[in-house]
Structure formats: C-alpha cells, structure tokens
Length: 421
Image: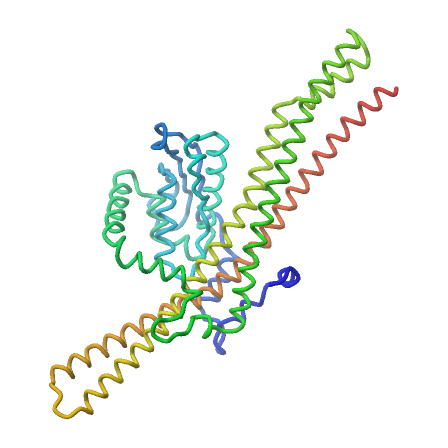
C-alpha cells in the first residue's frame, strides 16, 4: 500500500465480515462496553521493582496491587509478587483462551539489558508492564477472565503450583501438536492447503483483505515512527548534555572576570540553570516514558493485531481442509456402498470416519465464526483507541517541548538583558 493509501482513514471494519443480519448482540455489547468501561471496576498498579540474584540468573520482582469492585474477586484490594515470566504466562494463557481477541503486548525481552539490570531498563520495563496489565483491565472481555483474576489473586504457593503444572504440560506437547500448530500458524498467510491447493486469503472477504493490507502497512509505518522518535530524543539528550558542558565552561569563563563582576554573576546564573542534573534527568525520563515508550508500545501492539489475523487465516485454512476432508470421506463411503459384497466392518469404519470428519468440521466452523465475530469488535476498538492514545502522546510531547523551549528562551533573554544593561 502506498503512503497516500495509509494516510487515508482505515477501511470501515464495522462493515467487514458482518452478515446481512448485522452485528450480533455479543459484538454490539462488546463495542458498548469498550466505550463505557468503568476504570473503578478493576485497576492495577505494578511498582517497587526489586532485583533478585546476580548474573544471568538474576531477575526483577514487582509488586502488583489490584483494586476492584468486581464481585468474583475475593478482596477489593489485593497485592502479590510477580516477575516478568509470570506476565508472559498470563499473556500466553489469554491468547490461548480468547481466539480473535487482541491481547496487548508485553515489553520485549532484552538479554543484554537483562544482564546489566540497569535502573533505566528496570524502570522502563516496570512502566511497560503497567501499561500491559491496565490495558487488560480496560478490555471488556479480558478483564473478566479467570486467568487475569488468578494472576492478580493467587498467593505464592498456589501460583507456583500452577506455573509448574503449566510448564509440565507445555513440555509434554512441546515437540508434538503445539509445535506443528505454531509452524502452520506462522505460514498460514503464504502457504496453500495441502488438500485444496488454495490459500485462506483466496476465500476471504474483499473488505477484510483491505483491512489486512492496511494493518501490514501500518506496522511498517509505526516501526518507522518509533525509530525516529528514539532518534529525536537521543539527539535532544545530546543537546542537553552539550548545554550542560557549555554551562560548566561558561561558569569558568565567568570566574575569569573576577569576583564581584556583574558579567560573572550573570554567567553563573545561566550556568547553574544549564548544569542542573535534576532538570536534565527529569526531562530525559519524561521523554523516555511519556513519548518514546508509548511509540514503542504502539509498534508492538500492531504486531498483536497481525497475530490475530494469522489466527483467523489459520482457522479459515483449517475450515477449508475439514470441508475437503469431509467430502473425501463421503465419497469413500459412497464407493463402498456401491461396491457389491463389501464387508460390513469396512462400511461401519467409513461411517465412523465420516461422523468424526463432520464433528471436526463443526468445530472448525465454530472457531472461525468466533474469531470473525470477535474481530469486528476488536478491530473497531483498536483503531479508535490507537487514534486517541497517539494523539494524547503527541499532544503531551508537544506541550513539554513548548514549555522547555519557553524556559530556555526565558533564561537566554534574561542573560542578554543583563549583559546589555
């Protein structure tokens, strides 16, 4: 898609893959719920990161405090200790149990940063985990999930038991079905069915394919915006550091004018302002957490959208394959019935296989319909929330830049006035 195409509004997803009868009551309720989500129902704070251990085995633990008035929770206020892999468990479970739902992204793993465990890395990760879990709390489906509730409520013994059980289950099937599932999921958009020779996209709705193309281009452009946001802030950091050094040299220059000199005093005032570590550090943190990190999260979030689209393609491909498989079973049974003297055992076996193929087709059809229906709500909400979040982030960044420029201009004007007085 061209840049001009991306600058246009996204395709009207509400009109995509909706049957003539309109959106279901569940989908309509989902849209309303997302627009009317009450933050007081469930809010979470991730804080107090503490480094545990040393070297490659080191990790950071976080306090996770949940406040809620949802009736299924045992307490209105609860606090647990979690680490990054626990958040990863939660995301994985939510994706597994909620096909068609866009589960928000986690901060990416960084082995180099993890090894050094600098405070900057820890603070940024804590901030990103806060964003992740509170996006879950604002989601009309995910906030009611038993997995999220268990994550927020389970004490250490129950939590560790679940994690060990989950790891054992994962290890048992690691080389089997799930490995194959992940492989086919990853290539669902580019390969053809082994049975039909057709790709899933060939049977997709034309409007949906426009949305899919838009999202693919959106991912590229969001990645570019993040990269240049990072470059912009790095350049500004270098400018601040240069100003700090300039302030130090300015102070020394002022000292050369001699004690009591009017010029020395004015130079010293500007130097003190420019050399303020507190001002510099505070500005750098705000740039990272309130501008760069949100841009980075938007780039990660669109990848989650693509994951759901891959799930949909895989589900549609499976549906097509099951339809073809059912036809093959019907043909086999018909041939057997038309064959004189065929054994009853063969007929019975063929009938059982036909029944099993019918059951699998129903399951595949139900899964695809569920994903398709949920994506109506999910994509509409994603476009709406992305626009709101992005505008708020850019507005905040612009205001901070304006205030900073005003403060700097004020200091320089004061110096000019004092020097020319």
